[in-house]
Image (tube, rainbow, N blue to C red; front, top):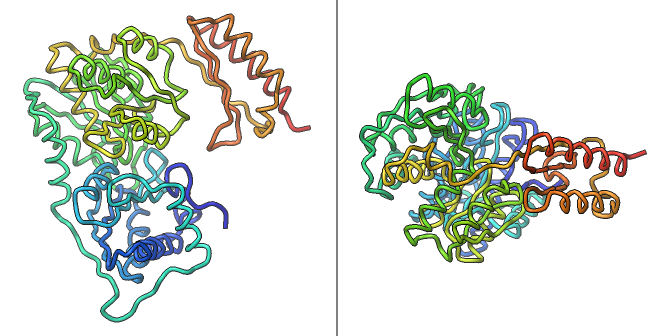
Length: 447
């Protein structure tokens, strides 16, 4: 068996890559590790998004947990950050979320959180893999067998947590919410209505088969058009497990994760609540963000792509704000992972507190045209030694100066090399990306 855990837990096609047998083994291994750490009869929270296969995998996971002597506490359909929060604020020894986030309905995944609400470390995941591969999970009998329990009040507690982080009154603010027919469909509208907003919902009727189906944060045109159709002040679009957020202005303009992060960074800087006046981003963050932060006097720490890397840098440096262009924003004072609903609350709070529209707030940064080209059918392992490629990159960056940049990197999830270029004009960015991509192809193509 190859590596089971990827960059964000276990993910793959349900019943093919992620099978009930694997879910059972993961549950059994998790309780075994907790037993090794001296936790007797651990309680493990389990949440899921609405996709059909989640029920199958939850049943298998519960079988594994209980067979090893753990109690499984089901919170049913719940956003990923909700599971993380409830785990950290309860006596649970761990939390498990069954979701494939923004992936199609046929996929699913398993994310595991420790008792502090943070995702497991690489070493912890490696220990689980060792037990799964060796089939060495503990098995108990008699009264030692665990039980399946339900927490019917979990959603209410999570909603109250989100409402409690602000005392803002959003009365008079009309908001369209796209729930992606996923885990945010119930929670998000409740939160915004609790705060006084007039909420219009779209794609908030999950039936197990329609999650992310031309809906949610990966289809930003949907929320942009909906805001115009409903004459709303803002639009909020979540992904399948609600750990991301893409917004829309009253004029139907997209507000992506870079802009959301810039708005929050500016507000926290002004209020003196931005830890060390620093924000954490990834290498894919638009150069316009860096220019905006420089103008504010805010430092930027850059990491590899992935919320795990962002979170690691935040915890290591004592920072409290970080995020990605995808809309995965981490507000570490209130959450241990990205939380789309929490981010939306902070964004709408900024709108109300400043008296400015989201359109006005989004002007905090000017986005540079950004072009991304994926180069397939090349040997990614040879990229580091491709001297001609790196020489060309250096030449292009010298030509672009402070007005652009070039990023070439192997994908961590697909068999491609990604070429990203930012420049003053879309035409320049496209032409530069084509030149670099052509060189990558000629230098790295397997003969």
